Image 1 (tube, one colour):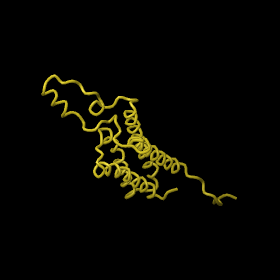
Image 2 (cartoon, helix red, strand yellow):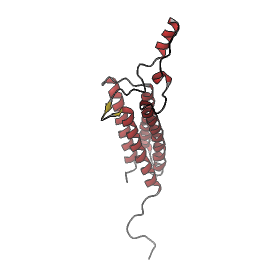
Image 3 (cartoon, rainbow, N blue to C red):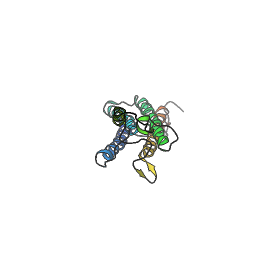
Length: 171
């Protein structure tokens, strides 16, 4: 069992690493994020804020509820990542701004408006992959792991294991 501040500190560290890697790939690696990539960063930012506050002011009785709240944040993250993976694999239709087919413009103004609306990065084409898994796929894996970690922490703290040894008041 992690100590009172250990669980939120672990979530804080893991979330900072994941979000930091996404930002590093954008600003130092040159990978421009698509619309869905940007949305997928929000749960990680929320997890950082929640776990930071829990690390600073958390108490043992509140820890199970912090773990449950973080598990819910990561359920959202799993859903967003699964949707993005589905868009990349063409299982789902993505947002029209970053994955829809271009429509023909009849006037110069319509063409200009279409170009200005168009996102520079397509959501349905992975910009990078490692071992055949896109960044959205890696985000899905990380989100599932963090959900499992938070759910396990919640369940462990709600139903603590009985301590071995002699109980007081029993003969």
